[in-house]
Structure formats: structure tokens, C-alpha cells
Image (cartoon, rainbow, N blue to C red; front, side, top):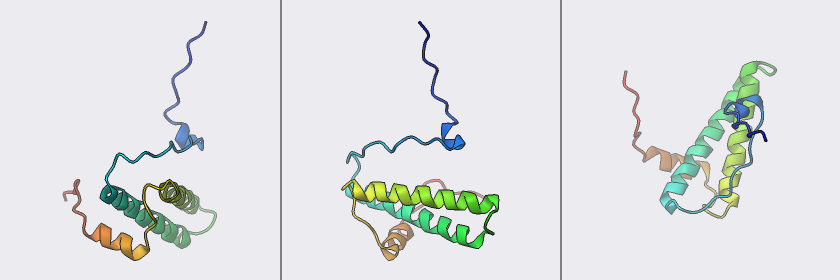
Length: 106
């Protein structure tokens, strides 16, 4: 009897994605809203990068893929019932109030 091979850690980099696991609500509402604001901000940034990149370039394809994945994550979070959708203005307000726990030192 053969033992199963371990999962390929690089599967996500090869275009293979696993489904998003069902969300539970172990985090506080405030933490979930902050997470959603971060995802929305990154999604919008990826959209801007995709729009600025020349179509057909690797940069454009990567930015489009990132935008699509972030959009899907945003919808997974909001459609799970764990947290309600945010406007861009609400996301900016939440992000502005954050202190970076991992500041980059020059």
C-alpha cells in the first residue's frame, strides 16, 4: 500500500487554487471590518495597477489576477454574513486609524 504524497506547497503558484474554507466568526466584529477594509484597499490598488499597466504584459496579467482574487475574497467575506460590505470611504477611514504593527525601518 502506497502512502499519499504530501500536498504541493507551490500549487497556488501554478494556477491551482483551493476553495476558500467556510468562514466562522471567531474574530470580533471590529477585527473583521478592519480585515475587510484591508482587502478592499488592496483590491482597489490592484485595479489601479492593472489599469496603469500595458495590456498583454506580465505586470498587467499579474495585477488583473490579484484584483480578481482580492475581489473574490472580499465577496467571500461579505457574503458569509460575518461582516457587511464597506464603502471605499469607510475602508479609508478604518485604514487611517491603524497603526502598522510591522513598521518598515529605513
